[in-house]
Length: 162
Image (cartoon, rainbow, N blue to C red; front, top):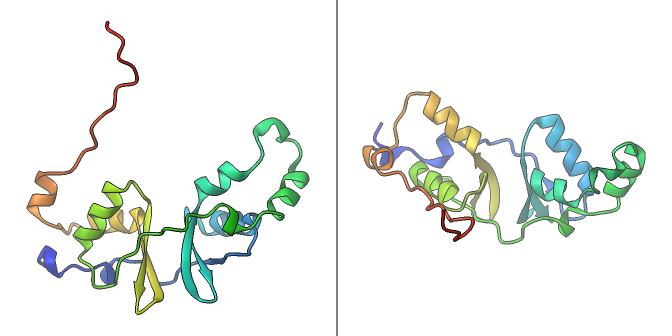
């Protein structure tokens, strides 16, 4: 199969777990843990309005200083909504977007997933795991993508002379 014929729809996850804007971060964390996922598209009245990641939720939780206070932490998590921690400007693709394009977007923007939206409706999500499934299938996107991967340039931590 030529790389231009491989589309997101062939490799995306079609049964997408989602949360609503006013769901608690505690609920979002439980859904992620139970389903072993790292991102949840956020809907408002059925419309995609953002995405919440495990990092967003982890960053919102109290520090480890309260580690032995599980019930307090759970109550805390139930008082914050997904809307308070989610990313609003979510990047999306269409189901007929070439998979190579989705791979480039994931890599260039250093994100873990792209919700798939057709006609304003969430129809799937393509994640790094979906891309790994593609790679493990033995398929290939294109020789040029493999031969010329984009690597971020390293930034120096300091300009100190050795």
